[in-house]
Image (cartoon, helix red, strand yellow):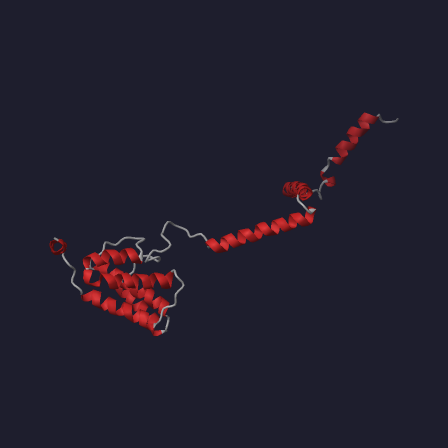
Length: 208
């Protein structure tokens, strides 16, 4: 007996729904990726149709955008985490003046004058903090430390500001330090270490 068209269709559908016929079907992730690539291809096709020069023009535009993004990233540099100022004197956290002096001497012995200058300036400021001539303050710059220290040690104010400029030039200005630069900070470190602060009352009396 012939089977009717509709019952035959249902029988075929039930047969094809069996798992044996779908073992090689793509999984959900593969189907999603196929849809994504199809959508991306449609977008590119539409964009290439609208862009001058078709696909070639679109490719040139994409390369220009990538080049501009790379140039901008190179110009601005890699973003730094945290809120610490870029020109903070102590970017690696607190260390003692003795530690900075030891590091400065090691760099100087090896002829690494840039690092020697940086560590000697840090030693000067940290020593002033340890003597309570400066209040410890995270994020303080070399210029700020020199200005504040000059109020307590006015006889050395000009030399402190000059040392801060050397530190900034070496650290941020691309300058290369040398042995005389380091010896200048070493002399200042020794002079400041033995200097007696000027009392506020005496300074105010002198100003009057």
